[in-house]
Length: 288
Image 1 (cartoon, rainbow, N blue to C red):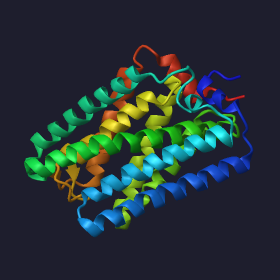
Image 2: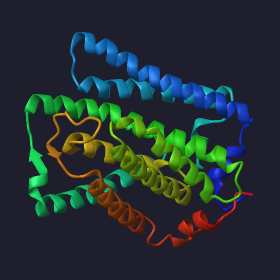
Image 3: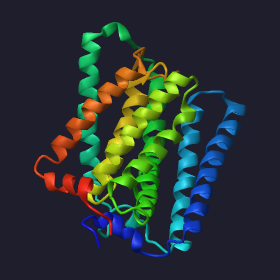
Image 4: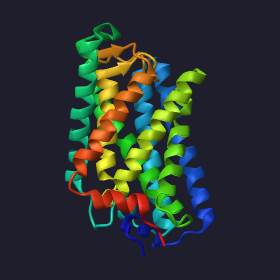
């Protein structure tokens, strides 16, 4: 057994390599079809960009269900083993991660907004904004929780069975996480920057997950980040650039990356200020 009991959870159930391959392909297909089909159907009645968020919610909800079924009946694993090392979800950690990230990210963005007000455009239309808030609060938590469960739970534990150094599964799943978001952008420079930023995001979430022995802090932060970007500080270059968000920015993606890195460093420092040993075990521990 290792010092990282979250990775040790992978030893539960069956772990044949082909099971991971089947699960990865099946979940990916469900996610793609579950996202595209609802959008196509909704667009026949009302061609609205909010349909894309609804499609995301449906697609990731179906992906979450498929991951549960495959983990339970193919791998013979309990879902909680992909979440933490205990017996129930730590909701307090989800709220802690979400609130802390919301405070840090919004504060840094507001500071940048005050320094460079021309980069932001205020846009408020009550009814579309209200619909955006409702749909986002329903759909983005599902998306973020699934991604943490899949990347930081299922895949990271799986790679932990293969590699001895605990940090390697974190790095691999972070790169996969970044690459999976490559389709969100339309030009090469934006794509490379988004892959970089989401890979760094995955690295942050992976380290926090192992240090805290669970995905809850990462899930809370991920949910807050997505809600902030959709509802309050939407980038004009983002996938959902035409959403009726409160502010639309014309900032370069590299600026968003710098803000994210600063927020990520502060996030880790605040959470683990008195738990430095938990961070060291992620960097130096072996999984055997």
